[in-house]
Length: 471
Ligand code: 4AD
Ligand code: MG
Image 1 (tube, rainbow, N blue to C red):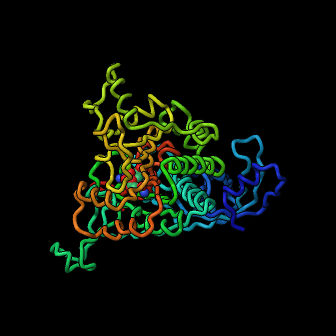
Image 2 (tube, rainbow, N blue to C red; image 1 turned 30 degrees about the vertical axis):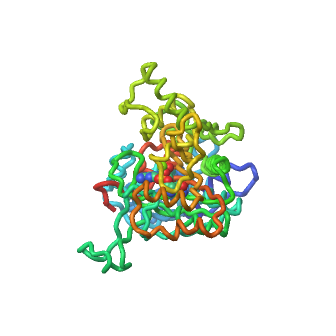
Image 3 (cartoon, protein in one colour; image 1 turned 120 degrees about the horizontal axis):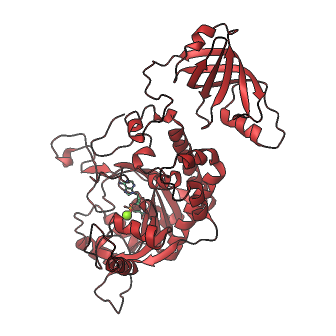
């Protein structure tokens, strides 16, 4: 019977007296092969666990000779008797009775037993899943995805598939990738009879359905031709966008916090071996990964909430006290730079922090204008919220949506949105538009936070970034 290594570990870990199988088969890949004259030791990994199975074979095997020259990376099926080995580094080992060799890896297989840098492994992204770090990351990515669906499903949110091909630039940042079948830019003759692009956000479409289903969320790939070659930006990334009606900014903040805590708790419950591996590999050891996650996910600590105006004051004060920022011209109205965001949540609040009520001019056209502040009538703000987290910066961006038709039309002008392609979106406001709020959570940024991996390229199987379309 074919078993997984993960299952064997669960059976031996639990005190439930579960009987271990005696005769088992494991399908997998060789991590190492050491052998002497009569006996050999294989470390086999089957992808189910960051733990390997030690398999002991001897010269009685019919294909003993072939087995002794099995290389790292080779694909095999190994059968035998499982022996408990309490006290040893592994709780059990396999006494091999049979090895089927499927494919012997070429000796220049790049993933050898030594440590490889993440940069080297990025160049070998087709093979990096065979290392423990990437095995751990992608098992966690799977768990996080399920946990997100579970969270929303349990709260009666409806999973909505927003389109991938679209004519709108929801964020108005001009970062769309064009989808075309022509080469002459005459989009009126193109497939859709107009210019089409890959979506930067499913929000506008989600808003339409939130006006009947009340609570919806999208979870899919999004695309941005943002030419910022940073460790936190990808041209293709996955975004989760809840949108819910009869909701205000406070409800939005609560939902975002509950989601993050719930997902982290789910990973702590289900991916401890993987987190333990990453914990021990962690480059920056200021706070062990698992401890950090437990604090953030704990029921007691509410994330901090602070207004944009307060942040500006804090940053100016920090500058006054000697803090050097690269971007120095800090005043009300600037777009917060990533160094400011990180300083705020890493040095001042030292915890996940919601920044709310940003200037209208630096946010998207659809955000709801706040009532005028009588002390600062010149400062127009919107009911926006960004969640900033230590080590990453912006993890979530969201807002309450402008529900006033006239105001939205005025925003259209102010933000120089041309054409009438968004008229359907404006019209929602004319047909019983209930107050609506929502946010976007970048899956890869969340994974960076949970795994402690510092480059977005290492939490998505095949990253798409400027000048990189390998694999
Ligand atoms: O702040 P953003 O641009 O918000 C929106 O797209 C809204 N429509 C969301 C909404 O209200 N429904 O993006 C949301 C999040 C960011 O906070 C970040 O985590 C992630 O998406 N993100 C990226 N992740 C990786 N690479 C990029 N280039 C990203 N751009 C945004
Ligand atoms: Mg944003």
